Amino acid sequence: MIKSSIKLLATSAVLAVMSAHAMAADMPKKIGYVTNYATHEWYQNVIKGMEDRAKQLGIEFEVRDANLDVAKEVSAAEDFMSQGVDVLIITPVNEEGVVPLVRRAKEEGLPLVLEGNPVRGMTTMVAICDYDTGYYAGVEAGKYAKEHLDGVARVMNVGLPLLSATVLRSQGFMDGLKTEIPDAAMVHDLDGGGNPDRALEVSAAALAQNSDVNIIYGINDSSSQGGLQAWKASGRPQDKLLVVGTGGEGLGFINMMSTEPSYKIEAAMFPEKVGFTTIDAAVKLYNKEEVPEHIVSPTTPMVGDAWKKFYSVEGTTRTINWEAVNALKPADKCMKTAADL
Image 1 (spheres, helix red, strand yellow):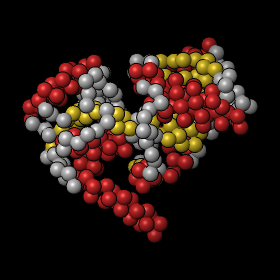
Image 2 (spheres, one colour):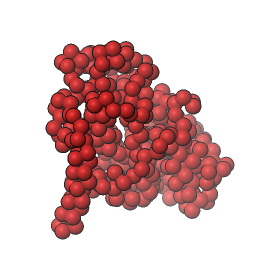
Image 3 (tube, one colour):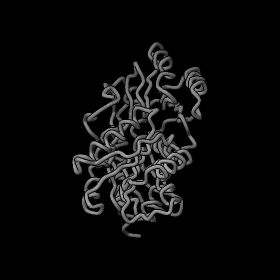
Image 4 (cartoon, one colour):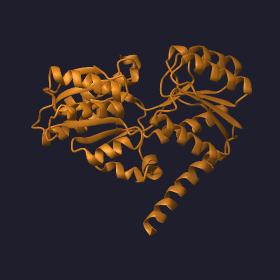
């Protein structure tokens, strides 16, 4: 109880300092956020970070869900504009579909922050460095393979070629892996759709064709977990297998790292931090402050039980350790971006 109280006080102190800094600026009265897929665990935690930060700053905050429908996203954004929100935040369903909204917001002088994916003509975006996230997870995977997999790295990449962000993660992972194991090979490069059912389906088919893999990399948690599920369904042992996930989206990766012997590495992306930072970016734009085109949100590979440094779990609730996450230094510049593809 004493340790928990000290931790809570330390976290409260960190947030109090950040809030005091933000409160020196004028606050927008209302921020509207159009998310692309609110039922996904990642975006639920992004929204939680936004809600918590908006509440700290006394800002009214409203969310609309596009549910992966571009037309619905445009309609929701236009509705927010007609309401006269002070700042608009959008997570694009796809990049081209949001271009007219970016153009209109600029014409009307409405501050617009993008989350997650770049759009032509944007002012600023809050997002991780996708290539870097995969790269540093790949380095850790290489170190693990040297020690536990006889220095062999044969990869099944459960990817998502539709999005530049996820392609960068897969490329980064292989490049990072090869810094430790130069002859690492990608045996399967799959389109897992970013969802567990599709990831399971394509992984099972790939393993039936060629099971000579010992590393499963997933571009998000659903992909890595679907890949592992396919491996287990085939009856293969996990003693010479490494699974690497990406995202740290919710409780799923914590459960997997706690129960599955092969799930050893998670490239954590801290959705709560993304949401928190996006609200701060919205405040800066509202105050006409200079902001970079890409505001980088930090990531880090978690190995083994290192997730406990950043999260605590009670029942079905996970709580972020803001002190630990805020201590992570984001990159000044991404190693590679979509422009490099």
